[in-house]
Image (cartoon, rainbow, N blue to C red):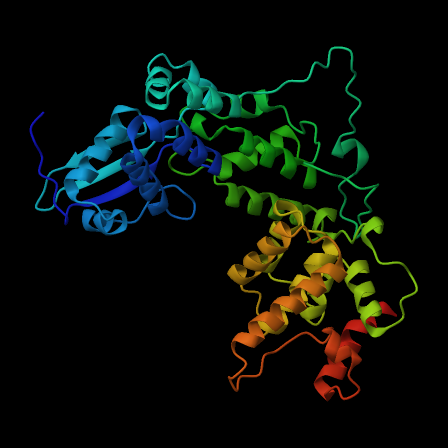
Length: 422
């Protein structure tokens, strides 16, 4: 092959030829880095970073971009690229021109099981790490299995415990821990065989996609044939299933057939076991009661003065309740807090930041959500203490509710919330 001079101005785009997750990132660092070195791994992660939000393809970059991010010269970057190509993580295509153009196709790392079974990779890893480190790493990735031969699986499934309807309530039966246990709602063999192989990219058929299809089939009451129709509608030009489009299409189909209503997973209210004891008649206690006994949909609708929320805001509710699995009362507190802090706008990035923090803090009750919101507000207020800017805050902050000199606006806000409690 003739030598090609790589220049800083040479263009490139990154194309994702697989589905990349944080698990792949861990495998890359733990298993591949001892084999190909940190420079190759850093290049891979940087190319991964260049992908768009849907992780399909990047915008156009030049190689000076890589030099700046990696703090490396072009020769080092080229060697790192060759290492990735040699081990099957990258394919490179070149178009010669005034400025050469490259296409970098990213491929996912092997699974730990495949890597340790590989006749070459496993030997190189052993040689580079040594016996002790190698065995330690192998133990870390070992699959532990409990002998269940004498046991019977009596686990209840979500679909046999609950029923998805278009009504406006959803009662939890007891406390559920861990992932939702949901039996297959569709015949996956029939589903995928109904779509011609030339149209569907088989790389997209992974566990996460099946979980999403299963969840949507349950939530929106879709059978195998109807789900097949929806999948055909959301296939992109590369043969991948656009997950966001699948969500939107399933939601629209359900609403069309249910007079615009959403299913109960969006309508549901706080489970009884996470509610405050009855009898707290203080203003704060009454507000907690509103958060606990109002569905997020209805609470958001009240902020629209009775009008239906926008599809964008409904999608945000779906993400908070289904993807992050936040409790309904917590979502209501979050909505109220963000709208007050953000001039009555539900900024998605702002919502996701707070929701992620509360999820990590394992916030499950309205009271805990209110406390952490107040704490964060006070922390931020201290930073701008010398500023003349007045920080907006919800009326349910402790100091306001205990104050006898609430403003007219705050009194009206309190009354508006408590009207739901009557």
